[in-house]
Amino acid sequence: MIGTQEMVILFFVILLLFGASKLPELARSMGKATGEFKKARIESEKEIKKIDLIIK
Image (cartoon, rainbow, N blue to C red):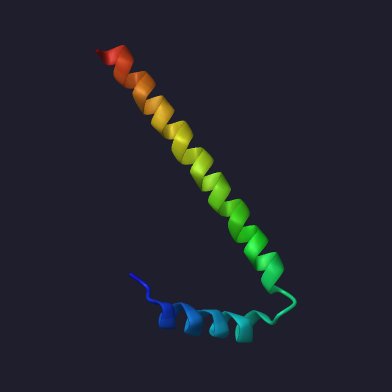
């Protein structure tokens, strides 16, 4: 698990690589990707449950 010190160091490295102006855009795209991943996971769980009910 990543600790607080590692998170701070990682944040500063990202800040140096992308610059302060790109951080909001980067965070927004990461949030959208996380949302899409969550939707896909929920959909696949629904499909698995549906298939499971058909088999039984």
